Image 1 (cartoon, helix red, strand yellow):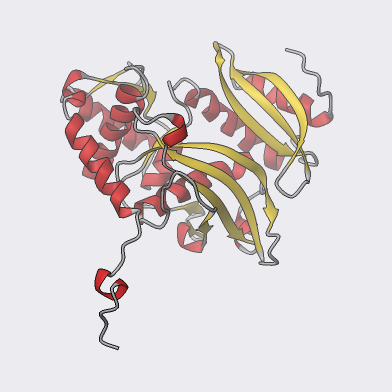
Image 2 (tube, helix red, strand yellow):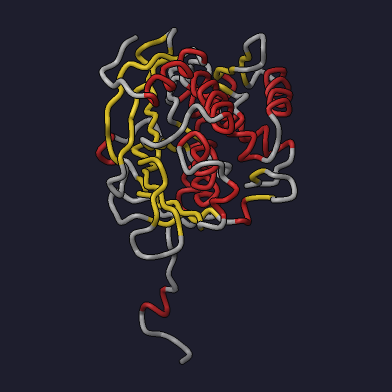
Length: 313
């Protein structure tokens, strides 16, 4: 499909998208948070054009560089799979929060405060399936990485950073270090070396056991398929989840197979996608309670005696 934007980068994006089973339906000149020029594309799943994804690259990005072309191709292949989800923007935390990611402004930009960091802004929202959009709890996020840490990332662009940024947001939510409100200022999500193993050359966010991974997959299918997806199947072999759980895609598929054997999930023949079942949805109250507990954990607490002036000082 021809688009109005005709640049060397746009030609490369159209070729890479087509190879991944995607179509570029729109491409425009835009700008990042700091005004740096970017090219922003709307990608659609070729087999389902109504499912779209926002893809943004710095104007000077060299997609023809072999160092970049292969990772971008792999990223777009994942996008094509994720777009098959009923809600491609939804992610579930280990704590049991169904969250959406939106409004991210790529690529990273140098901090305007003078700090030696790269920043990217975006939003995450609680998706409980019943709260009106204008009443949803959310957090405006300012994710940062030091200039030194940025050296492990091939480029400060969306294809190379989206996965670990989204997983860092999930991790910080699990730790109760982001407060979800109806409005508010941007909250920091630092991405540091504690999330990265230089020895192994990969990100590590959580150490999980088999039971935790089973609980996670069941929760993901409950929320993303059963509550938010109308029972449509969701991608359970997502490398982004594997990174978040410090496991492999093969392990996730094996766990899903076990859950399907218990009647909790309904798997496709390739063990790639899973849909909710009646037995899973019968645990509605448990998932609602777990979400409420995880949400409460994100809220700041105060020492009521100190607030009332009763101290030992």
